[in-house]
Image 1: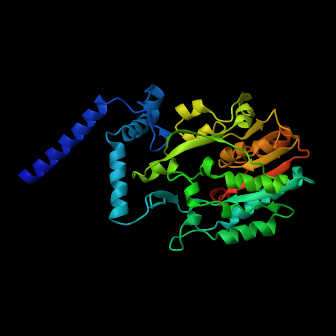
Image 2 (image 1 turned 30 degrees about the horizontal axis):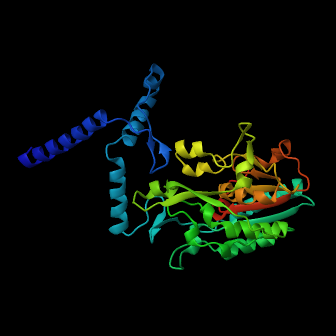
Length: 360
């Protein structure tokens, strides 16, 4: 072996040992806030794991998660891919004008038809003689120009119009803009959707009242896309809207059988996903109860995570809003929890959900 090869090998081993030493000396990170997930901790070792060989897999995951300067290397890789190869990152994300997009393309007609079938099944089983509405929440790709691949939103709307019979469509596309969404996340900002809430109330209740809100600012919001691209994008400030009606309303979670507040500030302080502030995060079935309502109106809101920020802005018009997330509960058992009577009904789903076959 010549001197050059010896020096290269020695240099490589030195670097490897240096990283190994840093990995041993540094305190393990518990959470990656950029990726919004908990990191692998030092694995527990027992005889069964050694015999099965899973202990090596655990150590590999641990080493990758606790690798020194891991976020720095991830960002360097993403910067190289974007600036040298001009390509999307590994997760199909796109950065344009300091906004991260996750391109939704193409239209999955089979999944859309399955979701339409599910909505019709629910209507026919539970919602006869009720006022039923539906709405579609555009994803951020809708606001990109025609130079980018995106699904045919007009076609999606037309397919739903043709197949959702006896349901009234509330078009909110015209009430939204790219500025209404978080730069680093899929979701809209609650403080930006007052026009959406007003339009829904006008369509379903026949009126909209001039409701005043206090805007409470909490801090920087790093969404789910932020950790996927590994490139610094300046975050938005996370805010929530409240007033006396919302403050005095309470929630009931069917899953843990507990009452709570509309906004869960403890979740915001401790959760990896700060969006869990709104109605305490994902859950199959939850109610918002307005004990001081001047009406007996109730609303059944079939929704995805976007509904967590929308529902508080509708509670002034209802005594109770029941939010149903069909990603986490099978529609066949809804009658075990809900008495279907004279409620308003709104199916409101974002485009990425409608473009996947995940409603139960």
